[in-house]
Structures are given as C-alpha cells and as structure tokens.
Length: 183
Ligand SMILES: Cc1cc2nc3c(=O)[nH]c(=O)nc-3n(C[C@H](O)[C@H](O)[C@H](O)COP(=O)(O)O)c2cc1C
Image (cartoon, rainbow, N blue to C red):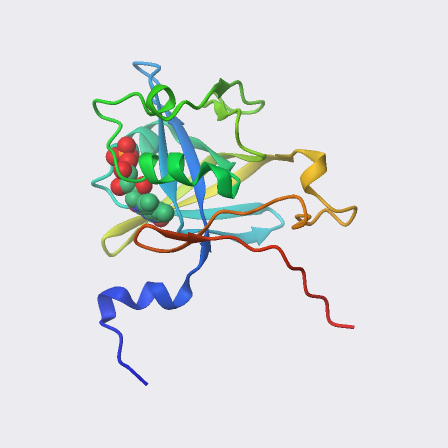
C-alpha cells in the first residue's frame, strides 16, 4: 500500500464524468465554458445536483450572479475542447470561438448550450455552500435532455454508441465501452 498525499485524495475517486458547464453574464450577455469533473446528482425528488467550482475561476462570479447554468455532456471526441475550456480563462478568450464549439438556445434558462454535446441539464441555483477551496452550487434541475440514439430503451447511456469523456486526472482521460449487468 502507498499513502496518497491528502491534497491528491480526489484521484482515488476518479475517473469522473467530465462535463462542460456553460454560463452567461447577465449584464454583458457574454457566454463562457468551464470544464468540470466535480459534479454529482444529490436528489431526485426534487431533482437537484451539486457542482463544485473554485472561486478563482472566471466562471464562478458569472454563475453565482446569473444563478443558473447548463451542464453539457460531451463525447470522448471532444477531449481536446474539454482540456482547452479547462485550462484557459474565459476572461480574455471567447472559448466557443476558440474551441470551435457552436452556441445553441436552451429551453428553460437564458444560458445557451453547446451544439456539439449529446445531452443537457438546465439548472437554476438553489443555494451556494462554502466547501474549503471550492464552493458548492446546489441547483434545481429544470430540464434534462439527450439525443435519443445515445440512450437505451431503459433511459440509460447506450455505451455501444456513446463514448463518455472520463477524467482520470491531470490531462489523462479514458472512455468505456462495456456494460455489465448482474444476472
Ligand atoms: C478535466 C477537468 C476537470 C475540471 N474540473 C473542475 C471542477 O470540478 N471545478 C473547478 O472549479 N475547476 C475544474 N477544472 C478547472 C477549470 O475548468 C479551469 O480552471 C478553467 O480554465 C476555468 O475557466 P474559467 O476561468 O474561464 O472559468 C477542471 C479542469 C479540467 C481539465
């Protein structure tokens, strides 16, 4: 056994589904994208998820003030774009333009989606909770939508078709293609 430095314990909980969060500044109407791996569902009735964002991120203030965001689910083939949106600040860069991603209107929120993604969760913030060096955005899910071809008839990801982008750590990613079911 080997002890892991405590500030790296999180890697024992990876790989994590990597998502692209879109946000929109209400005053300037400017949009931004931040790559996030620390996101999880926490309630189904009512539907709530939690998103962990470091206050130093350019997106932090935008999300906090807009009180909404969209979770965009990319496929493994968007790894390069996810790394770009996860390593560059949107303060001076238009990430949609630079990453070659297209803006699409959302249904329940002002914040737009990313056309190249395969599923979306539109959220409004319920509460912001301090959690060490990150803040937790507890958010109500207003809409969840996915391209049909990526789902099974049970409403799960069809991993023969969808290649999820999973973050191992640093700039390593992995995907999966097998589905196990206990019989
Ligand atoms: C795979 C990956 C996952 C990340 N997960 C998170 C996360 O969960 N929370 C967070 O605050 N930053 C996370 N980041 C870092 C931000 O995406 C990164 O600092 C980004 O450049 C911030 O953009 P912004 O300053 O335009 O908001 C992650 C980066 C990568 C590459």
